[in-house]
Amino acid sequence: MDEIGGKRMLWVDHMIRIRDAQDQSAFAELFSHFGPRVKGFLIKSGADASLAEEVAQEVMATCWHKAHMFDPARASVATWIFTIARNRKIDVLRKQRRPEPEDLGWGPEEDPDQADVMALQQESEILGRAIAELPAAQRELIEKAYFGDLSHSEIADQTGLPLGTIKSRIRLALERLRHAMK
Amino acid sequence: MMMEQNIKHHLTDEILMGYAAGTLPEAFNLMVATHVSLCDTCRAQVAALESIGGEVLDLTADNVVSMDEGSLAATLSLIAGGPVEEIRMPRVKDSILPGPLQDYVGGDLKDIQWRSVGLGVKQAILPTSKDASARLLFIPAGAAMPDHGHHGTEMTMVLQGAFQDEDDYFARGDVEVADSDLHHTPVADIHEDCICLAVTDAPLRFNGLLPKIAQRFVRI
Image 1: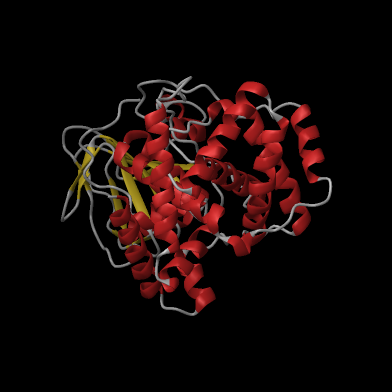
Image 2 (image 1 turned 90 degrees about the vertical axis):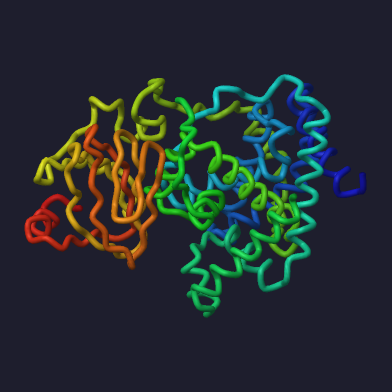
């Protein structure tokens, strides 16, 4: 496995050390990587710097408190943190209640199969690479769709591109990503 | 809640992506959370779209903003203060209403505050942010919904019974996604009263006289 895949497994290992041993040095490393990314995400979503700082701290504290909920056979650490940050964005920035789907009735397993964990983490590496290799026009729109709290029609307003173009570029990007994941 | 195995009409990628990114109005999030509670296919799709969000978060270097001085220490003391308690209402199993709808109704089917819209049709508006609206609709077996066109996007999902329009048949878990081009007259299946969740980001316009008057009073 190359460096990126190794890095994903490293973050998984950090989460397990936080969960099992309340390991503060593992948390410090996780914090220094993801804290600034979460803060950037919140600023792009419309928070000012001090609110973004405050909410990013809350998001990272939630990673500690909910470490037992993280399931490395189902998500990368980055994806898990993204969903926590997104939920806080809806609460704090959009000031909306967030409807929660029903649980599937099974939480993370105590010790998920290492092969499942490796497979999922490698898949997310392939996905990351496929996003990086998207044509620039498609990649920019994917980034805007996730960062910036914009609907597709708001992206159209912001970029001046016709809505149809936005939709078809995003559709093409998703098709490419799906193809890469096969 | 049992997953529905026979769902044929799913949510669109655009809606699911908006849900994964957290950019939808609350009423639309409610629709997605409700559908996903019944639909494994769309649940998996949401997970895949969330993983794109994770990769974008991880890889997009120009969105990184340094944390303040002393930030880690501040976060560790937040952690020392213990987790924030999340209060969640208990949910009923095996109800017509999936969990997210029970949260918005404040109970189960019997707790819905129906208001008559005329011709046997009833509705209950659910409390969401104002950028879109969500309501439950009750349509008597065999009855037609008032003929209406659409501004914006409207999504209707069947919870009980079924309905059909000119093109298709919709049973429990199926969602009809309509945009401004569609004019249609859905009719509830004759075998059972139909209950739906309907969300829209624009007021519906009704073509008939009676519903038009009703529209003014009951916020359809």
